[in-house]
Image 1 (cartoon, rainbow, N blue to C red):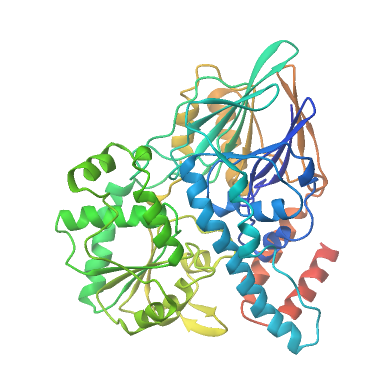
Image 2 (cartoon, helix red, strand yellow; image 1 turned 135 degrees about the vertical axis):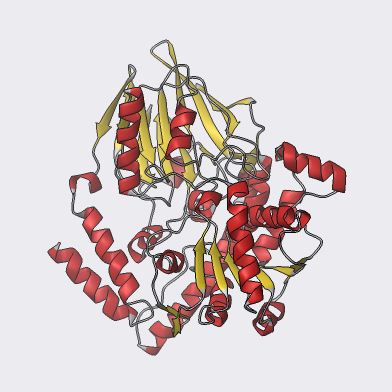
Length: 516
């Protein structure tokens, strides 16, 4: 078995791994790169492999950083099965066209500027229509059921406990008469999360490709531990006559926040108020969550049976379905909770709500998820006092809060505890889906705790898994140690010049790349 790491290597987004075994070639995930300008540039151009030569694909879950380049993959020649859970298929059906639409809108905006300066126009990575070609290829499978996507390969999906329908891929294959087990965790969730069940504990694997998003951090509790903080934020904001603005990922995080509000209202911790979900995609995702009770944990299932609906379907919940209803929310000046996308505040309707509320000291902005480097969300959490939104400079006077304990990703201690559940530990663990410092720190922790080799591959690195040994073939990026510096320069300049002349930014970046 050979694995080549084409995404989420020493960075969090863009998960994409090519596996090859006895003439069979397949992908695990095909995600969109998000964050800095340098990372986003990786979404363009051709794939470093031929999509038409892939025999199948394994999709771990519906988050865009794992699924977001599927329409491009199909557009460039992939036409074989995509295996995933039924909830993942349902969520992807709404998320991928939405991603295509966002790209169309962003390109349309950029092209107006390019046309005015007489420069060549650009095309979106894919369109909403392109995304429609993905769904017919999806084949749904259940947790714990063996299936054979190709001769010589058996796959079992296990519940990853991350979002609705998220899965770990356990791959069995023969090597010189011996059975080998290769596991991809996808995104590993936490125990005792709202809505979804705990991650499945795998007992044995020869090789493990594991996420490391929070490899050097420990969460501050979970939902229950965050309720007092969130309660205080809401009550203080309402007393001051402001709004609570929540940038939230449309899938899982919006539903988790709604569940948290359900508990707070049941316990009479916060006053009656209207909760707005201002995201067409989040509205559709919430409705999909309500249709798949088979994935619920015990608490959510109990509420579902007792009340006839899951806890995230609040009585005081208001959906804003169209643009005018969203615009009208700008007239709501106090005592409202507005949940909108994107979760990193990088695009979508949330930017309008931030533009109208960030400058108001009586308001609060509450983040409930990971904020990638270079995003508006990350800059707000890091304390920037002035940001540019839609070309307009906005003073940051609202209170900024980060509910770190609310992550759907396992933290350092939780990932070590999950590894401790193995009866037979892997020979080698490959750490992906983490910023470089997080992955390297977690690799050191694994070696110290378990004495197991933990590698942190670069983009383009390949590993040959043979005879119980992993042999690394270094790719072009791993031979260029200055690559990390280049991306840091790209990210920081993008922050400094946010909203300024993009052509000037490109020229500066090109110059710094040449001299670094």
